[in-house]
Length: 397
Image 1 (cartoon, rainbow, N blue to C red):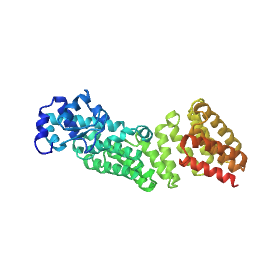
Image 2: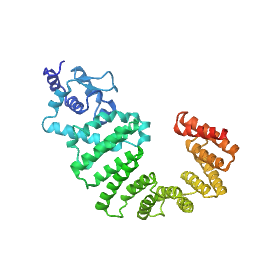
Image 3: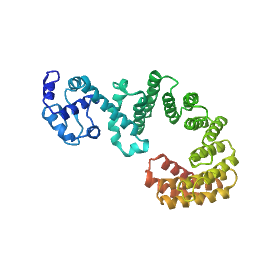
Image 4: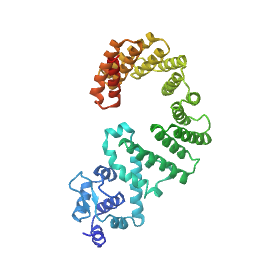
């Protein structure tokens, strides 16, 4: 059945409402196969029951239930289906469902565990392109956030950065340069630059986001904390330690330092103090963090490890080894003896022994860390390769 012959529309008119609606929704999708699970989420009824008449009318290509679907005569079907109130209703349903999916796209770890999210890319690109004018203002940033995350999951960081930059341009144009959602877009683009090592560009974008939030929310609003800590990280990576500490301290003043929620901030402060050779402040900050966490909390092991590294660097190797030993035992108890987190701690403990000149103990710990990382992460993982290099350095000493 050739497109443009009038045949497809005649066939469509003879179908039940459910099949006609499915055809209309498919006509809004991107060119090419459409994932079955996407249509299942969009439709309420039996999808196969609605597909069968479309297949029989030669309007739909699908090998079997669950396989990707491809609409025939897509342009003609769209022109027919999008007319009047019925067409507006279909478009609204399609856009609302896609926006729901955008809001649910997880961070990188979740995406790697569920590759089906990648099937949504062509459809979300519809939201960021042909359908963008119909996306409500309050949801305008979501298609770009989702696409950036999906590109990152594929390892395509430049494409992810492109979508983050596109979000800034779109939100500036529609909502204005001083809108809070535009500030969020600045923050997201800054994060993309930050992860790519472009710290100066990231710093400027974080400053843009901070300025807007200060103007719109006030200088002490909790929503400033995220961008302040991000800005501190960009400054730390440029060795602007005074600026870094000033931003972290400001964030600390907003959050307060006596709640468990302040733990990430305390650890960033400790790292900044350590980089600035302020070891006593780094150690006291780690201890403040430890005071906020229960003795049997698995996160305590990570804090103990940080404290151990700080104390060792500050000239207290005995205390450093003591707390590193505590961290290892806590992680063995909570995570088991094959968890990559334990591999990291053993690797770091081996480094302390190497710095002390205790090569036999350093070698033993590096070997244990390497076995864990090989089994858990594989031979080509950067962390595995780093431990292998450390072990080789010890063997050559």
